[in-house]
Image (cartoon, one colour):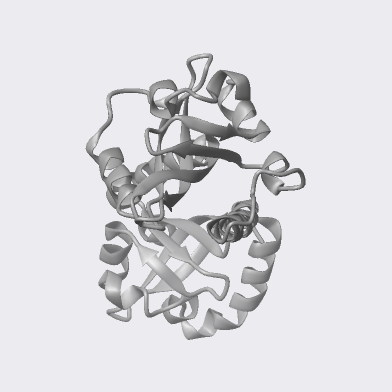
Length: 272
C-alpha cells in the first residue's frame, strides 16, 4: 500500500472516531475529558463555534500552523490562517457547512504563523444546535503541500514528454511488459504505415519478420533485466516491406511501461 493510501486510510479512521464522539455529545455524553484521541491525532484537529472562534486546537495543529493552543483559542480561525480574501470556493464550502453538509471538505492554501503558505486538505464535520442551526464544526486537516508540488512536477514532466513524443522526427513507441504497444508517436505511425489505433492493438511480434520472432522472448528478458538496450533490428511494415533500424530502448520509465526510439538505417545498410 502506498504511503498516500495509508495516510488516507488513517484519516478515514480518525474521521469515524471523531464522528462517534460527536454522536456521543449529541446524546449528552461529555466529550471534553482526558483520554480522547485529539491530543494524539497525527492530523490537525480544530473545533470552532458558529462565529468561527477556535474552541480547541491540538498539538498537530500547533505543529502545522505554528500557533500554540493558547494563541488560537478564542481567535477567529479564518483571520489567522487565510492567505487572502475569501474566494468563491471557500464561500461555497462554508455555505455547505452552514447547511449541515457532512461532505463539505476542501483543499486550499493556508498561511502559517511564520508566513509560509501551505496547502491543506480539510475534512469538516458541521455541528448543529437543537434547532438544527449551525453551531460550529470539527475539522481535521493535513498538509499536502509536498504531495501537490510533486504531482505538479510530475504533470509538468508528462507535458514535456508528450511534447517531445508528439513532435519528434524519430519513431517512438511505448510498450508494456508483454511487448504490446500502448502508444506510438506520429513518426512511428508514418514509418510503419499503421495508424495509432492500429498500432496499439499490435505488439513487437506483429512488426517483426516471422524469421526473427523466435528472438523476441530472449531480447525482452534481457531488456527488462538490464533496463536499457540498443542495437539494430529488422521491422516489418504494414505494406509487407522490411526496414532496418537502429533502436535505443529504456525500460520502466513508469511501472510496466517502456520506451524505444527508432532510426531508419535501411539505405545505409543497403549501401554497405
